[in-house]
Image 1 (spheres, rainbow, N blue to C red):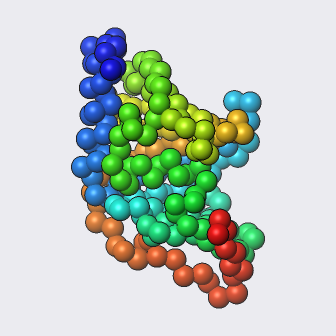
Image 2 (cartoon, rainbow, N blue to C red):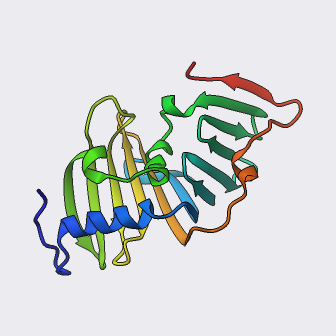
Length: 200
């Protein structure tokens, strides 16, 4: 059992439960994101855009930078479209090994103790940092660090891959339960785009 008490007076179990309740009760979610690819702690590439989530299992990463880049899940299939390469890659969601996969827990039932093994906690500038270690070695990541505000909003994720690569997501302008059209989570490749099947 987690019984440590933070400097704010909040019990760690309380923090985890509050975050779980916030996102488990939401049917849809919208945020703006900044995605950083880190090497030795330094950003080698920064991308931005808007993320839309809808239960069960739907997500849309619409990139503004680089413009036109798109990552969509319809609950069964994942599509990744790169306008630069003029290629759309399709894979099954259950076989996804992309770093965005850890965010899929926001689309289902978030359960820290079920989804992760050991935890480390610390407070910084009023927020709580939760380092959650992967429960098994069969996952594409070894740990996920969550930065949670006093209002139980996840504003930052840092995902460390099994190859020691690191990807950081920062979220702003979060909206719970906005009306989202089904068409957001459907993808039809543009004419002339190369289609590649992956993870078959």
